[in-house]
Length: 602
Image (tube, rainbow, N blue to C red; front, side):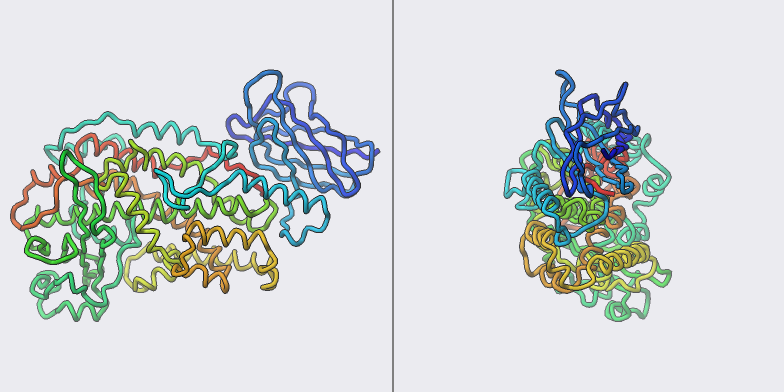
């Protein structure tokens, strides 16, 4: 009678252990063992421990294929999930690792396979084929796509059924409650009052922002290396609806320099927020707030500093839509920059950050969970990078886009925020998500002091090199790609639910040629790109005047009418400032206690 020794490891995170009954069945090529309870003397499945058990099947098992786990309640105690990390089985032939890395609920039956990566067409034994097929059917029932509903975009969000195996971070949930701040409606009487709101949160860089947010060179620097480094592009020709003249910018460019000459030299850049044109906004009293579709022109001066040189706050030039210049009064110019930074911040939060990393990451994640078996090599490659996606997005829909969410008090409100995300998604192309293509399309290959580009390309190339070697190993021929039904299913769902089947996005054509680049884009988007646009939010936006998500007054239509009082009446009030400051803190915070579950293989 052969003996099998099982070393069962319980996860080390909070509440990973259980007092419930755990049963195991070993399944081999020639038979299976009896269903056996794992029960030593004393507590068995204590957090962060490994317990060893012995099983002696009555019949020969042959080659061990699967380890089946079951969990059932102890007496009448309430649900107590168990996080099993791994099981190492010592067989007569040697030692086998069966990764689990998931939460197991009462009544659940889980079949673990050995840790070696295998594609679907490489399974030959009927028991493995059946187990794999059954697992994928369960996954597609567990993770389901839905269409339009009151609080979500068509096909971009997903419904996760009750047994989602993604455990919310307790820290994240408790910190999220900080958004429920007392609502003060008093406006600021000075910028010092704004400083007092965030004084207990401020770090060294936030202090720098508070001191320099009005400076033109720091304003320009942020368009290259701030929270949204993806909006600016080289200006090869002035838009006809932005009639900046040489006379207007002569004080900045200097004597003997013309705008056309500087454009030819590649020194003129532009941000155009036409995506905001006629976008819905929320009501403030009996009047709707206004979100102008502004344009801002920049000049890279001889000191390699990017300086704003002209701002037009609406798309169509007119007497009521003047072009604001650095030579205007200090408050006129500052007010114009506030409206530009407000559009910049809203596009960043809703399109670049929320839609461009979180919601696309959710599509990548759910499509992977539905289509890949845990032993698939691409599951093993991708799933560690999706670790926080589902719980954070689920909570984010409440705290950001819910009826009392953070964006409900922004200029756009929830309706406008959702519309901005829709517009952003409709403009998203595959090439815009690939950093080298994105930088090239915006003409920023050689602009100086663009650290987002410099660091980002290094990370892109590192990821690309690793993915290329992995693909060469697991997919030595194009035939291996076409035979992989799980891979094809994942790609199809990403195209259908992430890009809404839009063939103009460029994704469909690319997938026929360059799978390495696509996988690089996916990993880069959910790691480096998310870090680039997420982690600096508190640094730059806790000083709310540096990127206000709400402006309470309409944009100026004439020059020479503004004052400091005008600016203080335009920016968020005390309560709104506090909420936005805490929001930037929460969104920048790291949550290391969350454990991604489902079927994670190492």
